[in-house]
Length: 286
Image 1 (cartoon, rainbow, N blue to C red):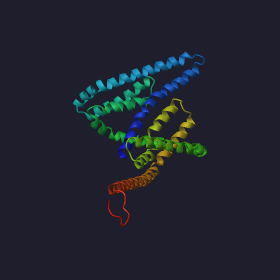
Image 2: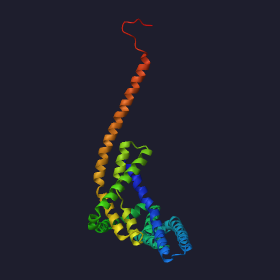
Image 3: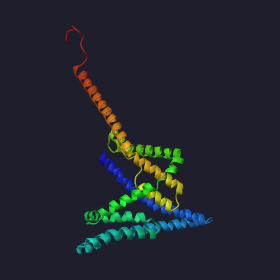
Image 4: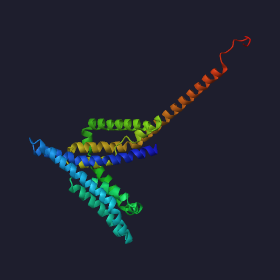
């Protein structure tokens, strides 16, 4: 269950990348469609231009990261200066974010790609050790900002909608994750446990929602409402985990009893076949 949950979490993080690419394209489509009413070819042309520029820019960024970035890190590592090494890491992230923003994408996507490129270098362990102090501070700042952005009066005012979205989010994610888990060899109990454990929203939801709000893809109130729902789903994770453990224990016990009963039935069937038809009492053997 632990390995399956970790795999799903990693896949969720990777699945954010297409959203970070698509949101600026959707924002441009809305802007162009509003500004050029009646010009049907303009939005399509601008979208094609943005898509081509984005794909070309991302290809160039990845090529730079895989070909030139390791050589730059080798040169800086030869200087044996930890300050220069940390500065290069931060410069890589800032430059990647600025580059993706220049080509019409989000700087969040650039920072994400920069992290992937840094992890592919030979200095991954040193990078993780050097940025450890920054990670703790920035992670705490991220969640403080997220908590401060929750609009409790809005949730109280629209609690039927929030409750419906929360139930739908948990139910749909649990059903999809649990159904897929059974296809990969997990038992019914472990699949239910995994589905309930991962049924809440993730931290990358805040990144996507904030980007959608900044790009005017989602209205401000909807973004606030969805952010509050994600926070509530994350707060329910311990309870959902306990519920999943209880359900998994019951299902696994039932599956075990069913297997034992089936095994007994097979043994009885084999015994009856080996003994043949029973003879009447007192009848002479054939």
